[in-house]
Image (spheres, rainbow, N blue to C red):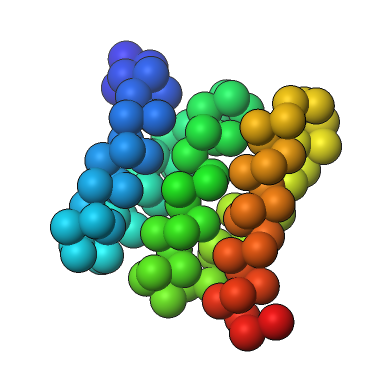
Length: 102
């Protein structure tokens, strides 16, 4: 049952992580989004979490893990042809490039 609850709460966990980031609690935001990603098994849930994860991980200085999230989001967007996902993956990739100074 615990996994079902975590799966069902995936997007709200992403929102909570973004709230923590906005409050300046970068470490707590990173923990929250990483925990939510670990529990999210469904592609739809992961896609919802990956975009905020990129920004949070960059803010936490974990650009390598942020890139992994951006790459996963790009893969999902290629499989699921939805304009929103394509835009989110492009935004995530752009954020990575900026963080890396490219």
